[in-house]
Image (cartoon, rainbow, N blue to C red; front, side, top):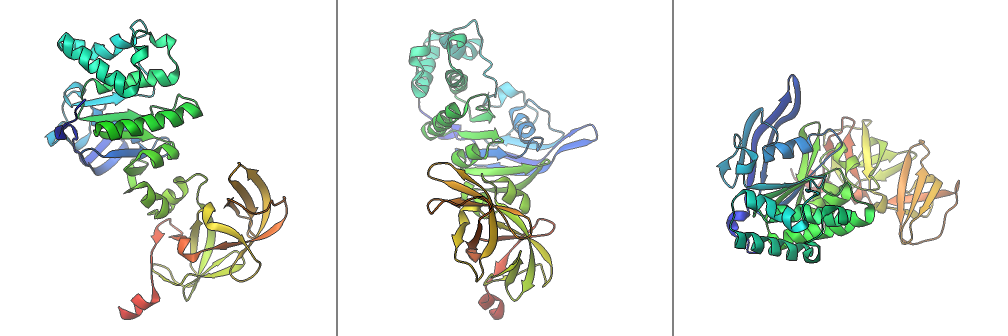
Length: 372
């Protein structure tokens, strides 16, 4: 199956809004998705990610703004004329038809010649490795096989872009992993533009070229998986992206490039902007960036509450003297018992600091400040 450059369609949203009566759901979003890019919309339930996808597909009307696909304004076009194919959470297969007939149905409705239909069906079956299933009916297939057929039905249409709306949420954990790999391989093979909606951070992190983090109809951050994980733009993104989540604890900016956390004072080596000495801030540190250390110095005193053993990884859930709980990821080292006192070291370069209102606090080196 040959994919032309035209099929790698750029998708643009310009000041797109959606309201239901007086209730605003999507608040003036601007977004540009490059041709051939795999973009994942992620966010909590009710953030507007599925609504946004359905607006791109034409299944929801746009209250205001414009949507362009491959340079063409499709804002008022019917879904069938937008050149997209959508894969839903439900497989939506015809139970009385064979797999072959399900794959061919849309092409038959479009009056595609029979030989072309057969060629497209065979090409999709080969890509998705469902050739031996063509004569079966959906009721004879597993959940993963049904989802492959649903994706195959989209492939035969040769769309400009694929839109996936939580397609793996009905599958068990093992099948989700295998289908995630299949979808990543499909994108690599076809090269189409793909937009994927999920609440699963693992899916977002492993599939996306770029992630769009949404909350309450607003875009909180757009970036590569590494960018949103390592350099969150605000407290919401920091707490939402990552499993286990980033540790977020109260701290005080002590001035002189120092931060006070519980009963420890940690030198940052950088000047924080937007705060003054004595201001309360939020400190974020990933579980893998905390390690058990010798007592004293700038280490945090903590008490082990519970240790979770997961084979190659252990998670220690610990109380700080402030009563706040932090998670520590361990790859090696000895076992710890409940109630045991430990000391935690964190590299200041791994700390992420936020204002009390949740905005990211950026820093610059003292040398750069002195030269300014």
